[in-house]
Length: 105
Image (cartoon, rainbow, N blue to C red; front, side, top):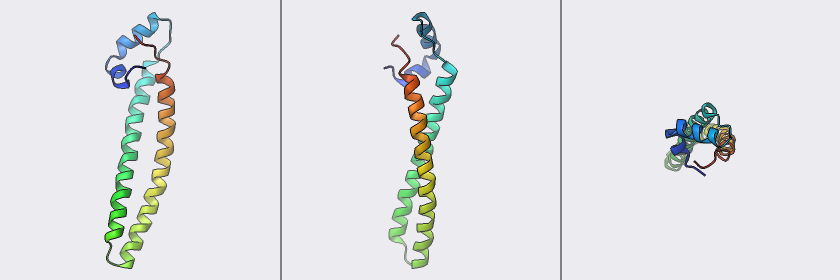
């Protein structure tokens, strides 16, 4: 399997090589999925970092009220993270399915 970054950087060569081998390669879809995957991965990682930082803040909270506010925020982030991880799994699944159709050049 070719490296996704290599494919992105050499998209025209890959398109030509796949065409010459008799395969159909949709470069626009590939680029959209590549960018979507990176954005979704970045967003998911940001939410994980916020959750981790929030967990540390909860441990360091001095009052019960402060802790309760932080826990409520962590729950909201947790829900967002569940959705983001679900989206990430879907995008990665679609991306990997497309990636498996690209023959070696």
